[in-house]
Amino acid sequence: MRQNFQILCFILVITFKVKGQLINNNLGRAFEEQPFFNAKEIKQKKIKEIRCAYFEKKTGDIMRQLNKKSIYCFNEIGYLIYVFEIEGRGKKADTTYFEYKYTPKGLVKLFRKGNKPDFTSILYTYDTEGHVIKEELFQDILLNKHLVNAEFKQDSLINYETMRYKSYTHQLKKIVYNSYGAPYLDHITFTNAEGQIIGIDKKLKMTSEINETKFYYNKQKQVDSLVKFSSLNPSETKSTHFVYDAKQNLTSKKSYTNKKLFYSTEFLYNNNTGVLSSSIQHEEASNILSISRFETIYFD
Image (tube, rainbow, N blue to C red; front, side):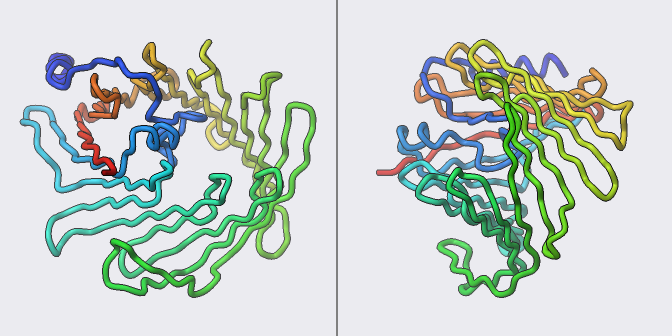
């Protein structure tokens, strides 16, 4: 497996010569919570779409392309506005649709997700400081037949939550209330003297369940690692470690459980344009090697 990994790295050419970080790894959320692309870099490079094809190699088998692809679509100011995740081919293809709308300050005001015919959306309301104070979940109706240039109607309110905040020195406490007005979750964010987030605690009031995440930073003030604890499984510690190149591009992500590696990802960039070209994932337990290859489409 190690030999295969080295061969693939040679074929895909790992070189990094262009300034600017295409991937935003704020709080270690890259490729976990969208949007995770750097809007300023997307705008500067005039990127319209990033298309991803998937490949997989199992032990004793050849590398095979999967019937799966993703398309990330951006507007001209660099914001991610649509994502299409497609599995299968032709009429049998199953498409998961994501849509993002933003406030003038660049905050997500609407997030929509679904497969035909079931779509839901979350509408976010902010206070003057940019804190979410209300989240409303709607059932949506697709008004036209196709997801390209799709139009929707927010049909019915499913649920909503409201948030209130209390601010202390290096600490912000968010209290989340359900639709009945009862508080059920405390979300506490801890910061250091430089304003970096160093910890997030989530405490469920009914069950006393506590989930903690601690953040650590490198000299360039990028997230170097994060460690997660849960009161439901106090003997287990999960951690993720990140590596960046000299241009501060994210190049490696490794995930551990109790210090045992279980998943790793390497990110590769085009040496001329600086755009993401490929990522290589290795799952330790199954010994499966997966590759994502990215194609970039530009505005005229």
